[in-house]
Image (cartoon, rainbow, N blue to C red; front, side):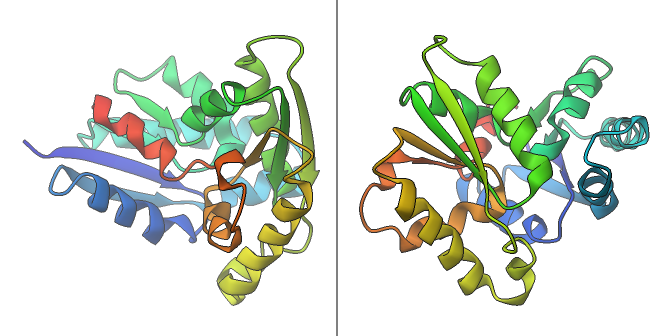
Length: 213
């Protein structure tokens, strides 16, 4: 029996890539409902924090997923993790965060962890998530923002990926694990020829949890 999955996106970038990956991983298993509201991410970026308004709107979208008959809700944005934690307490359907398996793998892969992001608002929630899953206090987490790259995704995706890959390459020998904080960064791995095993991304890792539905 096919299951219904609502995906909440905060950027147009993921509205095609994530559903395509799901259909490849789970042929004929899901009917997908895509919900896009880029104002959620934009509000966090501009204010530098998650406001009560963002949390309230997220909960409204979570309720929409429940009321449209979805079997689960997938959050495709790492910046909204705290809002998802609140919404989980109010829902009776599973709410999956796309970056949660990535955080689990990161803390199981080494002590010296680097988190890279192209959106400042993603770095703190991603590092907080990883920190909450640490195996010991010896595990250190460093965050680096790659500036002026996020906007390239829609303009010149190849340059976007190459710029990220350059930063990854620069730090590969310094850290045990390199975490790419956003799903939109995953394709940069194709430009890394050695050391890929150190890189952790939310795609396709974050989609494996859909097996539970």
